Image 1: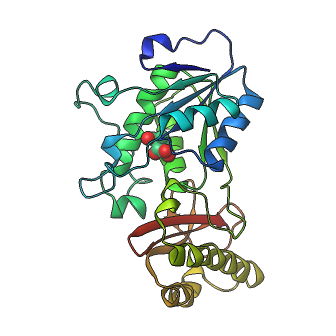
Image 2: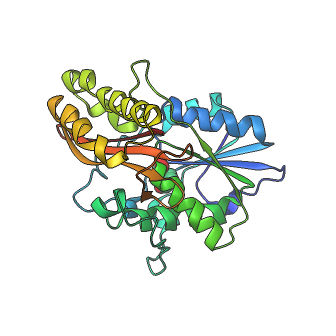
Length: 271
Ligand code: PAF
C-alpha cells in the first residue's frame, strides 16, 4: 500500500477505483467499507483526513483520536492500495468556496451542528475531485451525512456511484464509532440501550401500523432518560429527504442522537 500526501500522486491506472473517505481512528465499520471496496473494485483508495471545517470551535477537533501508523496497517490488511493522508494546507490552501446542500442538511444534526454539513459536503467533493473514484463507500451510521452526500452528487452531477453500508455493531448492539473509546466503563455499559430503544420503536411501529411514530417517542425518550441519556432528537425519517414521518414505510429509519455524560452518540435502524 502506498501512502500519498500530494494529490498529484494519486493517479490510479487500474479501474474501477473504490474510495473510502475517513477521518482515521479505524474500527470494524471503516474496515468493512474498505473490504467491500476491495471486493468490488480493481483499486481501493482510502483517505485519512481529520477535516477541520466540519468541527465547530467548541467541538473535539484537537482531541480527535489520531494514529496514522496503526490506521495504515489496518487499511492495508483490509485491502487498501493507497492511503491518501494530506495536510490541512493541501486540502485548504484557501477557504473561499463552500458546498451547501439545503433542506436535507438542515434538520437534526444540521440544527445542532449548523456548520457541520457544509464542511462535510465541501471536503467530500474536493476529495472526489482529487481521487476521481468510480464508487465511494459510506457507513449508514452517519445517516444524514449519507443523505447530504447523495443529494450533492445528484444536484452537482458528480460522476460517482455511492455505496452505503449498514452500521457495524459491537456484540451488545452499540454502533461502532471512533468516539466510543471516550466512554467511561459505566457509560459503555449503558450505551447499548440507545440501540435497544430504536429496535423496540421499530418493532412497535411495525406491529401496530395504526400508531403514529410521534406517539411512541415520549415513552422511548423517558426510557433513555432513565438510563442517563439526554436525548437531542428521536424520530422516524425518510432517509432521502431527512423529513420526519409518522407512518411506517419499509424505507424509513428511526434516528436518535443523545448525550451520555460528555459523549454524544448517534444511531439509526431501519423502520
Ligand atoms: O464520516 C467521516 O469520517 C467524515 O465526515 C468524512 C466523510 C470523511 C468527511 O470528512
